[in-house]
Image 1 (cartoon, protein in one colour):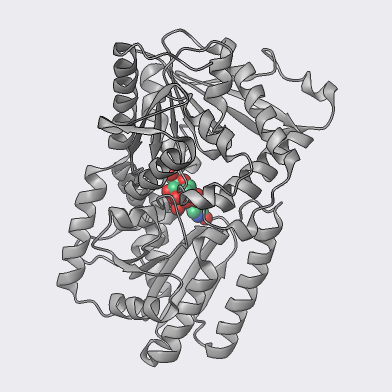
Image 2 (tube, protein in one colour; image 1 turned 90 degrees about the horizontal axis):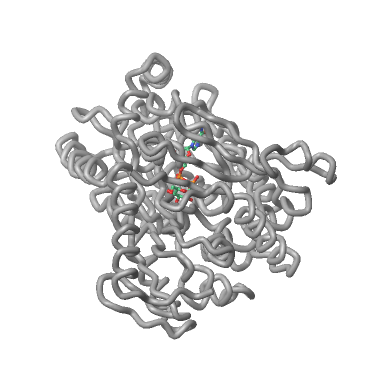
Length: 474
Ligand code: GDG
């Protein structure tokens, strides 16, 4: 069996539940194949002497069971230009349709290219001829092109966890042509949704003159690239185990005891402007104003896990949330009831299932989101005999799959408030019906399906390309 090599910006110990996200998604694939996970250590060094502290030609190697973790440090300038600059001040905002928040600076682009070259230089000597390489997310778009330039002929797939913007928004990135050409060095590009696929293909056709071939292949730059939608799923079983573990049960009973007389609404997000948090608070305010029966009755718990605090836009958001939550509590709160409990801290992953289960309604209302796993986690944690209701933004990738949720436009506070009211008053029979349909979807398209579908499609793409002996670009 070929070894799986995962490359992503950050690397986590796949045995730790706290790692969450990608670690949970790929741990089986890594363990089964004795795989390697390569990425940034999260550390920076400020001078060249510190760089020598790295072993194995600049790579820290650590074995975790059968899996090897290989990490590199970055210097301060690379951290600022590649990570804070290009990844999080250019690609993240633009791909989430926020040109107003993008900061275009030529130094960011060169830092991004430099770090991708560095990753390729450090990774290439560690590769074996039959390794399958799976690169993750927007930090590493040009990695395959750098590896190919060094002579790497391995199958390389790329999965983008964030959405693809409409072609004209994408074209605002000064280096967009270079980014697109770089993507054609992969054998497969995986996206979250059909709408991302549509944007990607339309962009490639209009800006790169690509030809759309049968079976999901695009031809441009003398290369053939396969493109597919692989909506990321969750590990439903792992989450059920977490819910049944001591911390999960403990959290559930504490929340039930504390809020026995209340309806609990819950939001769990990284504090990020893509998540629509101010709009959510405004919708909740509208609910209290126009459906006064919810006063003294409904409480919104909003967990906003700190994220990317070195960036200015996130500081502004934090201040805006402090002010909105303060105002709603000041205007509507009573001695024995606060409308919003806003918690700007990380909650331990083991406690999340209990929190989800004790809530009647989840508010997952991003302005734009690649998928949104919180929506799926909330559903998986519910009691099937008395499940809560999911209020979901139509602009989350998850909305393409989770059709039985109450879909809302998060920019419309009145419409969102009406959906929340509907959720709070939904009869048990309808809740059960919707929940069981949603569970069938998240069980069928779980994280194992996602990984296998992507890797099978990658292998097929490589076979098809070899059969046609299509020339590789340099
Ligand atoms: C990107 C894309 C796509 C949240 N708060 C806490 C916490 N979380 C966990 C959740 C969930 C994960 O973080 C968040 O995942 P999302 O999918 O909601 O969003 P992003 O972090 O923006 O992820 C997204 C995803 O990649 C996967 O492809 O779905 O669209 O933006 O698992 O539970 N975990 C803990 N404490 C918290 O306070 N422990």
